[in-house]
Length: 148
Image 1 (cartoon, rainbow, N blue to C red):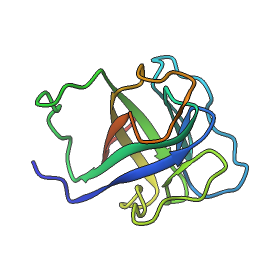
Image 2 (cartoon, rainbow, N blue to C red):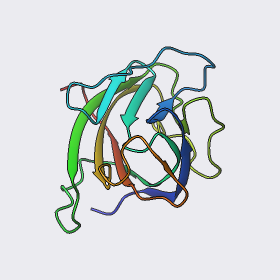
Image 3 (tube, one colour):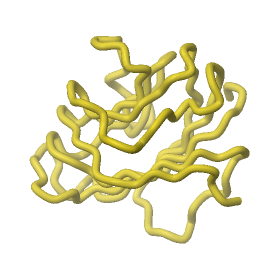
Image 4 (cartoon, helix red, strand yellow):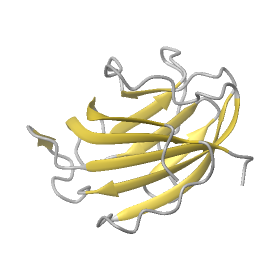
């Protein structure tokens, strides 16, 4: 099934953290993950990157139903998590950085529960370093779904 909305572009980050947050400055967010890639709290998700600082390539797909797992591209890691938006707003940003242009509201169906599938490639390319050009790729697929 085709996604209803797709955004694509580089996203700046720092401290190994790419965030989906509701926009509250200084809001607490997870800093560790049991699966090593992604963790969620209400109104906050952290995706842990290999690079420390600069930008990664991100594609976001908003789906009306669970998408099939993308086996067509060589992803190093894939993880699914449940997340909750109590405010109906989730934006993509790097830690302590302004959100990139054009990614819009990722909680597009309002407040409630969502499922997030994160695909990652290249996290081992420059661990802890700074990448002048993006060396990591992420695909985020999001759809409305009960917690599981």
